[in-house]
Structures are given as structure tokens and as C-alpha cells.
Image (cartoon, rainbow, N blue to C red; front, side, top):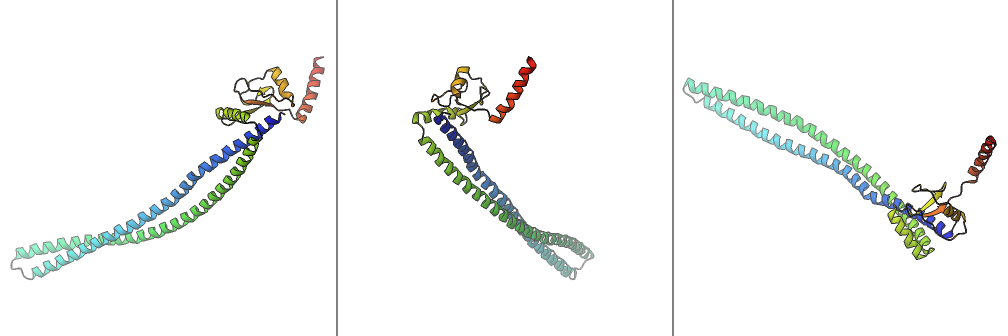
Length: 257
């Protein structure tokens, strides 16, 4: 095979590998952001649970004040009962007392609900704190794995880039520019193998005289696919495949005789 073609093939393999590694590197920030979002969800849940406790505490204070207020009114009405002179006034005060006692009962029920809700809210806070600790531990471990993988990928990419630069230095600049122009048009693939006398990338048949020249490993000329314009190189069939094909061809000839 043409030595320059061989170096282009190696260069292309390196460049494709570098492109794959670069996509991995570009994906790492998104992975880290997803890890942070998982922890943030747990922090939000904890903040919500704590706010619930505060709200219930405020509600409890309000109901306690209501209870004190209704108890004060009941005591006032009872003091007034001892001072009234008429039955109508007495009955009116008794009605006020019954109404105040009913409201007091409602306030006490609401306070009890708040107390029960407060106990549950405190348990929810503890569960949210445990969930946050677990989420942060998991996030830390995932972050460490991602960072380690990122360092490994970046190290490998640096090695591949160094190897790519070494191959570039071994090729004429005009050929390098030509290779890059074709690669940009075809997703990084500028060099294509010829298999079964066709371009392996676009499947277009190669002209017989071009095939003959491609088979000449000592040839220095560069050939392009007439359709996709990629640089072509010939791939010999493996010896085993050729050996298997020979008996089949012989048997076919015998059958035709």
C-alpha cells in the first residue's frame, strides 16, 4: 500500500477516536449538572419540610392565643353572671358562655391537630435530612467517578492528539490540507477502503483500470471515489477467504463442463 495512504488511514483512525473522546468530554458538564440536580432536589425537600414545621409552629401559637382569648372571655362572662339583676341578662350571659365554650373547644381541637401535625412534620424533617445525606453521599461518589473518568478520557485524548500531530508531521502539507477538506465534508471520514471493487462508504463501483492501479502497492498516485470524492485504498481479501473461494469456483467449473 502507498505509504502516504497508510499514514492517512492511521491519521483518520486517530482523528475519529479523538472526535469520539471529545464528545465524551463535552458530555461531562451535563453529567455533573445532573448530579447536582439530584442533590438539589433533596435540599429542596428538606427546606420544604423545615418550612412546614415553621408554619405549624406559627399556627400553634395562633391557636394558643385563641384559646387564651376564649378562656378569658368565659371568665369575664362568668364574673358578669354574678352581677346581673334580671333573668334576661342572665340568660344572655349564659348563651355567651356556651358560645365561648364551643369556640374554645374548636380552638383546642385545632391546637391538637397542629400538635399532631407538628410531630409528623418533625419526623418528615428527620427523614428529609437522612435523604439529603444519602443523596449527597451518592452525588459525591458519582462526581468522583465522573471526574476520574474525565481525567482518563482527557489523558487519552491528549495522547491521541500527540499521535495525530506526529502523523501530520510525516505528511506533505498539501496532502494534509486535502485530507482535512474531504474530512470536513464527510463527517471526518476522508479515506475509504475499496471492497469488492466498490467504495465502502458510498458503494459506487470502481472503474477497472483504477482497480488495477489500486492493487499496485508500489503506486504513489492518489485516487478518489468518483461519487463521494473520498481518497481510496485497496483492501486485499484475507488469505483464508481466498482459499475457501477457490474450491467453490473449481466445483462450479466442473459442474458446468
